[in-house]
Amino acid sequence: MPTIFRYLRYLPALLLILLSGCASMSPEQCRQADWRQIGYADAIKGLPGSQINEHASACAEVGVRPNLDAYLQGRQQGLQTYCQPENGFQAGRRGNGNLGAECPVQLRYGFLQQYDFGRQIRALESDLSSRRSDLDSNRDRIRRNNDRIDRIRGDLTRSDLAPDRRKNLLDEYNGLLSRKDSLLRDMPRLEQQAAEAEWRLTNRLRELGR
Image (cartoon, rainbow, N blue to C red; front, side, top):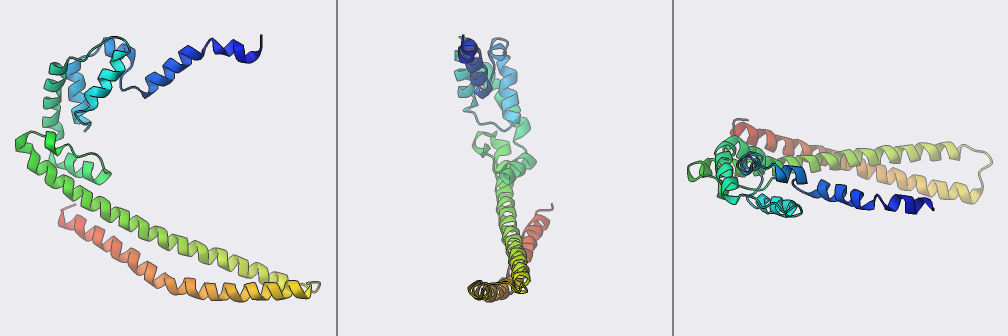
């Protein structure tokens, strides 16, 4: 029997493994589910209320239906723990979804306020990362440009260099010198932009007491 056909008998099991890897719950977890505890766990992890739909889809494969009342009771308890200002800040800073609308009313304002602050910090951190990346890229271009200049200088010392080749190298060399000047002129501006972005981030964190 060809090798490929010997392995085909394992295909259903392999597909089951792959599908379960994408599911929110395994068949065994569905059968043994404590839906109150699952609702609580989903909430303290900051997962949205729609997560119950993922569980329902996963457990439908084995004929298990979630206990929605128990799940929601657990979720409300979990939200009491999750909807704290610090979690709001960290969720905003990481770019996670905003569960503020699901938070208990008495916790909602503090969570949403800090979530917004976290988003501000995320934007400032992203800007700083971009500025630093621009600066690093320019430094790398300068390094590669200088390496090429050095190689051409070495080639131009060769006595057996053909006239046409020498002319082409000289033209390239002059172009590289001009490019080097341009890249070096960009450095102060890029360094200043990175420094200003770092200051904005540091200053905002200080204003927020962080």
